[in-house]
Image 1 (cartoon, rainbow, N blue to C red):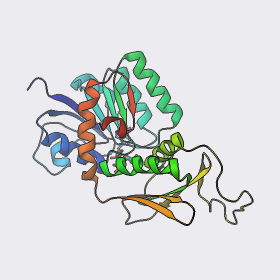
Image 2 (image 1 turned 60 degrees about the horizontal axis):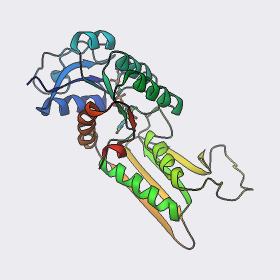
Image 3 (image 1 turned 30 degrees about the vertical axis):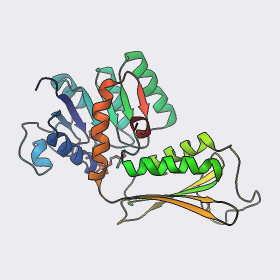
Image 4 (image 1 turned 180 degrees about the horizontal axis):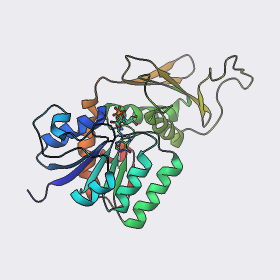
Length: 267
Ligand code: NAD
């Protein structure tokens, strides 16, 4: 069993983190060696996720856990305010980060890229690990070439911290790669209520809906001459992200630099 990938889960007590712990425990190619969370208490990682005990006790000390358990990879699903520090700490200890936490700025992602290069270590940051969302983004990028008038509407639960969502930002970036930058809509338009037209990104708009009861959805709407096209993705549960996270944990072992975006893992 010596060649199993040693995995630490950061944010193990959170909604995504618990799914990651379960996924790691279910895959014989992976070995859970650490579970880190600030708010879960010192409980067994297995009990935390409702399966049999594992002997891995959840800790709040990431650095200590890295030193004592020597993971190959950490998977981070924490918060926008802690993900940068966790990621930098992991890289400095030679541990490859797989980051699902959203809210990292472009500058922070660039800093992580530089750090990975300096250390010759692989990392993956993916705002969305779902295969359906990957396809939605690819189709949107394809459509933007022919229908450059576009708006994005993303829907998430009301407790989400960052807006727009990481997926919306990533979609906007992909669209911008093929869409000539230009401000669309009426140049004389006037917002009667601040923010009514949504966030401005490279000439088009992103709208963030936050309501209880909603999990994660996104629509990319294109307008043309006498027609429109709507590309929509709906996520129903967190387990749906796990095949993507599993793939990333395995792929990051082969990398020596940062890969940003799940699309780069899909052949
Ligand atoms: P959550 O609030 O349920 O869980 C976050 C957990 O992180 C909490 O248990 C908290 O105690 C813990 N935490 C916070 N700071 C920490 C630190 N410094 N060290 C260790 N643990 C820490 O949130 P969630 O719904 O699981 O979402 C987590 C993140 O994942 C969010 O940014 C969300 O947008 C993102 N997300 C990404 C994807 C994707 O596919 N990439 C999918 C869903 C959610």
